Length: 175
Image: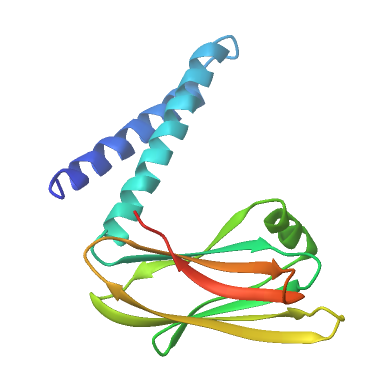
């Protein structure tokens, strides 16, 4: 299957070039043809992006880290840092609009990369404002065993009404 990737990539680039040439030569009355070509170019671009991701991050070494937020009363998120083994791999500062999107159910991809098979320690560091409006820093950590399947982790921040404070954890998704 990997042998087909260069052929598919060359075909895709050829179709893009032909579509661009046709669009540049299109008459103003040929809007239907132009729209159809634009749609084909968009679909081709999507396919090429998926192909690129498959080539750069093969399933046997892929790790993806996402962030979800279900808080509001006990924690206001400012920043997150992600560390795999001894290396920081992701860092994000949040704007109020980004936090609002997460509060409305959004999930953010923080990191997509490759790791070798075996055990790895994943740590996440959260900063923000705590229950009384004071600066709040917490961390969550988990040791995972990377197999040949993709590894998908979710950093979760959830309000705990029983503890009256936020809870930070890392959940491994089952694929």
